[in-house]
Amino acid sequence: MTMTLEKLTSEAYHDNLQAALIQFDPEVHKLIAKEYERLQDTIQLLAAENQCSRAALAALGSILQNKTCEGFPAARLHGGSSVMDEVEGLAIERAKRAFCAKYANVQPHSGTTANQIVITALLRPGDKILSMATSHGGHYSHGFIDSITARFFEIESYHVNRDTFLLDYDEIRKQARRFGPKLIICGASAYPRAIDFAKFRQIADEAGALLLADISHLSALVMGGVHASPIDYAHVTTTSTYKPGGPRGGLILSGKDYDRRIKTASGETQLWQLIEKTTFPGIQGTPYFSNIAAKAVFFKEALSEEYKARQVKVVENSKRLASILLRKGYNVLTGGTDNHLMLVNIADNSSHLTGLSAQQCLERCGIVVDKMLLPYDDNPNGPSGIRLGTPIITKNGMGTAEIDLIAELVDTVLSNLKSSGHAIDQSVADHVRGQAKDLANEFPLR
Image 1: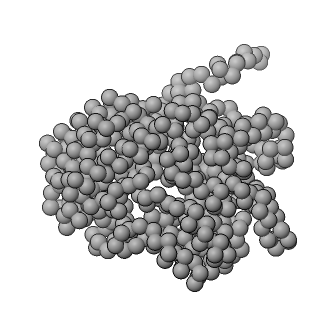
Image 2 (image 1 turned 60 degrees about the vertical axis):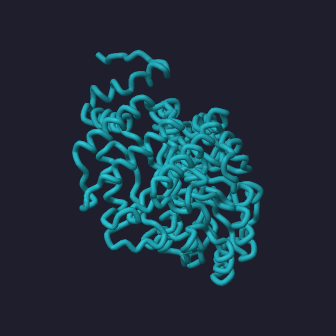
Image 3 (image 1 turned 135 degrees about the vertical axis):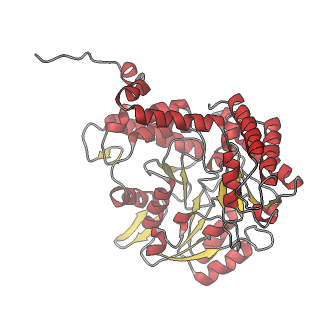
């Protein structure tokens, strides 16, 4: 006799998903719980991470993940795609509003994939790309020697000024004229100052190049109005969607140049059409519709006044932390920051310190940062710097008083590292870790 199961409502079907996981795979559930406790009990000073909302998490864990339908809305290869067309359409419209863009492609699986789509769409193998050196703040996908970008295109890097560690737009202009790139990439993963997208567009126009702005690290600030937008300066703009506080994934945007005609082997194609053809079938197969739904949720959040006000606070917190570290004698590159991150040359404070030793000891004490190779870094012992960021602590409600305490805790750890650079007195580590945990628990994950 066949057992008939009761049909559930969507709410009942999606309810208590963690309970289903506990029952079927307690090992995985324990690891998820372990990561939750790690995040809740430590101070996250990571510039490349953020936290998506519980509403976005709910969309990520939904039945939408089961749907396969390659192609774009109203032009799918698979049946049963009408609801997915609505989901993707909603995400597109909200993304366009959030960035004041005329075109948005929400299908890329990551920021790196978004870059690969755009580069493949605009260039042919062997074409020239001028991009920021990885060691000076550029992203690996922009042309690092081991990246797929460097495998198929001729890469030349521009650098920050050796004395100021700032972008020298006059030098970049000279380099572009000499090199003759077909594409210039701007945007960075480790640059603490504002980027002048208008100047980059002037340079690109003078060199006869297209301009790609990768704003993965700046997109929250752009949506919040605290950093200039590249949307109408760059021909194409890309970003990840998790760094500004959404789900894992990527996004491709365009402003006034979205319908620019681009020469191809078979004639001319509008820019947005070329990007979509390269997305599918060029680079990706089916989109991740649970992620696209979560992107839609996130873009709704990004349009709120609360989100915009938080981005102002992110920068305020970042500037305050940088200024305190400067007063304590640390070499904060460029003398401060304009955005959510700062770079600190740890090796300048002691010959035995490296970014790795600082990262490891801080993490033992409940403070999570990134080690970082700095511009013109020639330390034989390894990367000299660390990168600190304020998006997560700001998301969880921390402000001026908490930034002051965090600066004291960071200084306590770094000033107590022993000569090996990898050891710290257990009593100091226990004290700082306890204070870090208390502070993190006072501002729980939101």
